Length: 283
Image 1: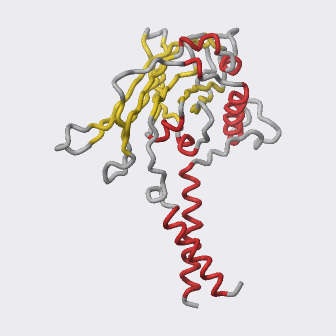
Image 2: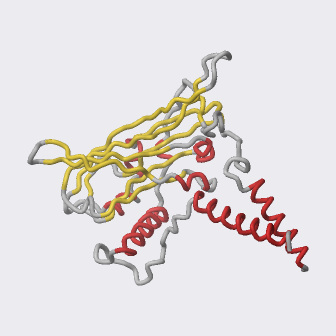
Image 3: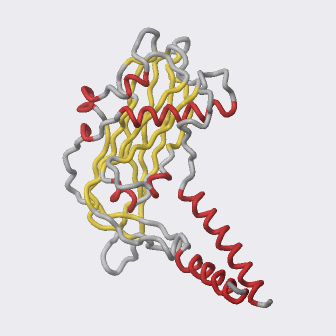
């Protein structure tokens, strides 16, 4: 290929990036409607053995509907202090849901957060989960559309005590307790993907709340292995004295490349192509 052909190819790549690689211009603007259910999977109101790695797992049913509206999950953790007969606040932790934006159609979608060295002791704990989203508000045709932040929450109590079941084994053995799992159900009837200059999304919800189906979210052994392999790899990268690390720390590691990271890589490639094409144009 001659220099003129290379120039045309680079300009084509640059224009494809500008037209299709933008997070707003090239984004899917279809808003999925239907029933969406959130379930707090683990931990449950049970007793677990103290463990260095301790997972918190949540599930979204009907992930296509979930992707239409940005949801966020936060864990608020407290530990009982016997000396003061009160709760010590451990802190609030966001749960990573970025992968939902680039998730496949597998059902349900699981989000999780693994604590390290927090639950490696006997204690009594409580955590509250909070889920946040945006609700569309339309007060008649004469008023502008706006959104309101909404949230739902609940609380779980559990104990860590020597001799109890290991949390890894308990996570994969929760089918018998599934009817007691907590969560929330939405019926999204309509929505707006970009309703203002901030490109925010909000949804309209039915006043009729569907019946929860918490037992539909079952944690399989493959998911448990993936969660622990990813957490183990992260810990072993900076300190291999905390837990037993595999010989090859890359085994089972979750790379953690999110849609945000993919976009950054794509835009970098686009910029290089654009600059190269621009320079060749004047050769």
